[in-house]
Length: 314
Ligand code: NCD
Image (tube, rainbow, N blue to C red; front, side, top):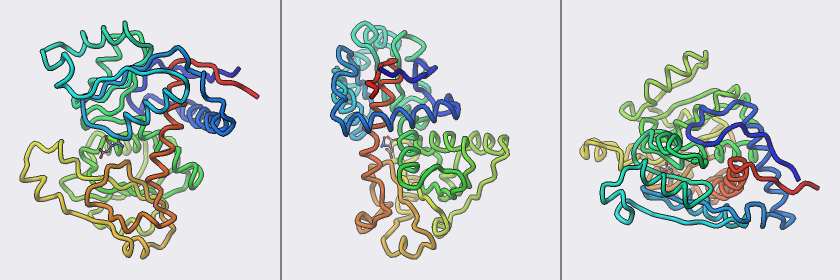
């Protein structure tokens, strides 16, 4: 049996990881993939129960965590949306978490309020995994994005990576930018000026001595190795008119991608709306559906790491 060294109870923010932690996560995911191919996953988390708490909408994240747990032989309990939970009766997150702690061994939580998963984690002894907290962070998505880059193109060192779309509210962008500061990456931020990367993230890059390009011109993705495309985050806008003004800011079509100087790897956390045309889907460098599939492997590894589980060795 093999147990990876993972010095974290919770997964809250991609900034919590050292380069060593990231290497451990990538290695554990590779091991999970091997075990999957050998049909040896089932039983690794037998007897463990995961609470799946999705107070905000989700398709991939919730289902991939639930699939990951079940494929490892663990089981799940689940609640979806505030209207079906006691939070709608006025219960605090703290009280809810005290119950969840009594019922389960680990909890995965998505919540509209930034910082909520940190509050949840401090209330309980069981591991808490942040599956998206408002416009804050989405660290497990960033880890699967990184895993996808490594699988498809190798380590990100020396790569020019474009972040496209809603850099202001996009939590997947926030988490991935922080994660990629562990590598020698050239950052290119492409967005309407009103949806630029928040100051705190730019300041951090500057403080680390990492230079980046910022532009509104989509053509900047043509000399990038990776383009990470995101939708405009409609639900985060306080001003509906502002969303209406920005909603059709950009759409990436096949012909536009074909004009690229490089075989740019196209990633998208999904769901897509109108920013990425379906005529791109059949291109070999369109990796977003493969990216979603890698998500189950990465989340299996993360569940094992947080639960300090033993994996079968050869
Ligand atoms: C993302 C999210 O929820 O932040 N979706 C996901 O988890 N794959 C991206 C988005 O909703 O735009």
